[in-house]
Image 1 (cartoon, rainbow, N blue to C red):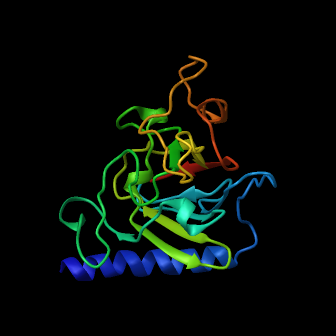
Image 2: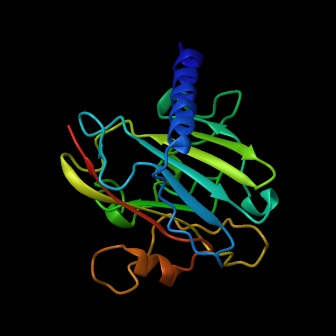
Length: 209
């Protein structure tokens, strides 16, 4: 049962990533001078995502100067008994993802942890190396609980943290993004203040029942 469930998660994620990658409306907000490029396949701007305010995908492509600089590893993971299982074990909780340690993912309507400042990267289920020619990694999360608002307008923000410790690896994402201007909202202003090595992808969409 466990392997079947994990396989279904993996299959759904791969199918979604492939389909959305082929679509024309990808959200990139690219900056040519960024060391890392972030592209969001799903959700797209204006999407009405999910049922019962869950079951929607957050699907990303990340392109690094080199795969070594990404600090990334394989994972196929999920909550409770799905954690740390073969063939690609990984942890699962809000915070920094040890498999993509520079990744910062924020949802403005998060109701858990530090709320809109909580890094959600370690909730991602599936991470793989897509193209060595472009040092591209795909990362996918199927949202399994209505913990990010119900029937609300939300904003997804994704970035890769700067190499703050200067070790040549983008592995310095925070568990919580500080509110640099003390306005009670974590936005691109706060991400820039923390330090990012990538563009900041910003996607407004709706989470729906």
